[in-house]
Structures are given as structure tokens and as C-alpha cells.
Image (cartoon, rainbow, N blue to C red):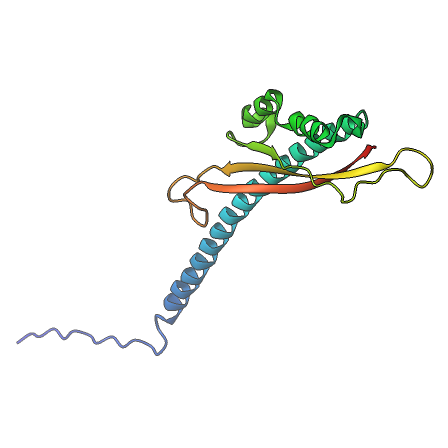
Length: 179
């Protein structure tokens, strides 16, 4: 009778270990790449917020500059309420609202941005004359608040919020008005 014997192959000790090492290395590499992608998405989100904040600071600075220019032309003889109303109206005028509502390419801020100026903070008591013999300078402070809504991220974007977020920047400016 003719019998064919199946040769028994024996595996060397450690055979297939290199394949396991390669698979573990690929797994670790993939985890590292996914982590880097998450960091990149977060960096883009933070950069976008930082850019909006820079534009808001620029708008608040422009408002404060307009108020300072106007304050140089005012005196307290018309009364504190009149001076405050004049200065506040500079940054709440229709021109400012139009500027802030322009497309983001023109103003740099997202649509729906608002700018508000607080009621003034006057010193108590009001100075009546200066030590140098000239008119006294009355300091008045205003808070300028810029509020904007950060646009929502597309659904499924990792590490970024999928809903719109309200953000604001508040800066205080102090103006000196001749008494």
C-alpha cells in the first residue's frame, strides 16, 4: 500500500513575532496621528476666536478714539448729562451699527456684532479748578462692550463646539474733559 505521509512542519520559535511588532507599531502610529488631528482642529478653533477678539478690540479702540477726539472739543459748561450723552452717542450711532453689521470681510467681525457704551462714571466730588491755574480736567470713565456670536462649527468637527457661542470684550476708557 502506498501511503503518503504529510510532512509535519514545525514553526521556529519566535516566528510571526515580527508581524505582531509591525501591527502594534501601526496601532501606536495611528493613535498618534489621530491625536495630532485633534490638536490641529482645536488650534484652528482657538485661532478663529483670537482673530474675532482682535477685531473686537480694534472696534472698541476706534470707538474710544472717537470719544477722545470729541472730548477734546467739549467742556463741562453744558452739563455732565449732556457731555455723557454726546460721548455715548458717538459709538451707538447708525454709522457704527452699519459698520458692525457689514459682512465679516469688511469689518472683520461676525454678523450680529453689537457695541454698547456704559453710563459714565464721574469723580466725586467734581474738581472745580486745577492747581496750575488753568481749567480743571474732569476724568470720566466709560465701559465699551463688544458682543459677538462665534459661528457654530460644522457637525462632526472634532474638538470644536457644534453650537454658536456668545463672546464679549469689555474695555474701559477714561477721558479728561475741561471743566
